[in-house]
Image (tube, rainbow, N blue to C red; front, side, top):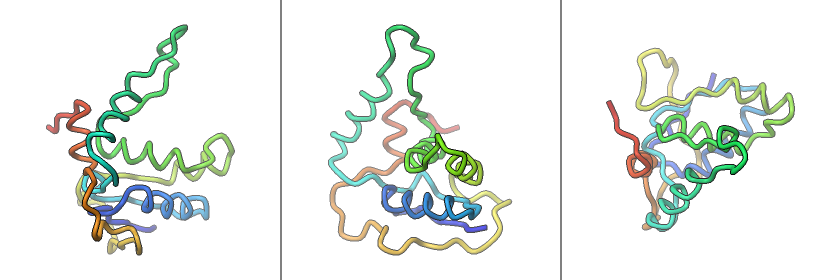
Length: 140
């Protein structure tokens, strides 16, 4: 069982690390998912995800792709895109992934940080928490 702290981590680099470990057969728990960041111009990123959420099939809108607004589900959906989910290995790997907002009490173990995924000197980025809030998420 690997516990990964995603706070101030670039979600792309962190997600690829998580996806590789999942394919290798590890159980992964990601904590502080809402504090991870997406690098780039915030306005462009928000526009991209608003457009993505509005895409629907004309024939049957219920079968359209779904992008969640809740930060933990949003991060889990991003990591799902990095897995070969149409194969049995990808489906089994996805079942071993748990993503949490904050740090719940039932998570055991010392969290690790991913090398090379820290925000560092980035100047243009948006936190997943802020992006989800702009997409319509309201925390309880």
